[in-house]
Image (tube, rainbow, N blue to C red):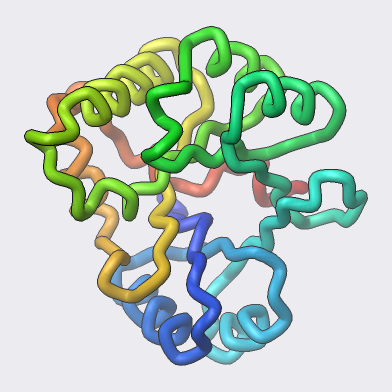
Length: 195
């Protein structure tokens, strides 16, 4: 059984967060992720959805927390990943052009997942952003062909950015990725359950 997950819900608005959880449950997601927040934990417990806490505090020794960093520049990312146990390298659309195979190989050797946020791509003009879309396609193809760890999350700031698993996979299939897209891209990695 697939454990669909959305490992990055960004909103801090309590009512919007509740809306997102209800939508996520309706769509069949089993897990959500968000940055450390006691109110969000309580809401998840009340609405009966499993959650994973994530933190940009990569120096902490706390267990059961996904440690993530945003891509800023290649040199900084490599230095942080060499020094600390990081689970996710989160890539915003404005940085996707700076990602290369060498970096992907480096992070995969250290069991770091590359995280693509699909909400970044929902409202872009594909015709005007051909270079960006081409690079996104190349990265996903490379990761899947070479069996590199990659996951797709929403990065949702509001409930309108939450999509059903089939819609997420359908969106990426439309980018000439139909041979590469599979449920594993939105399924919780077992290693994340045993942090």
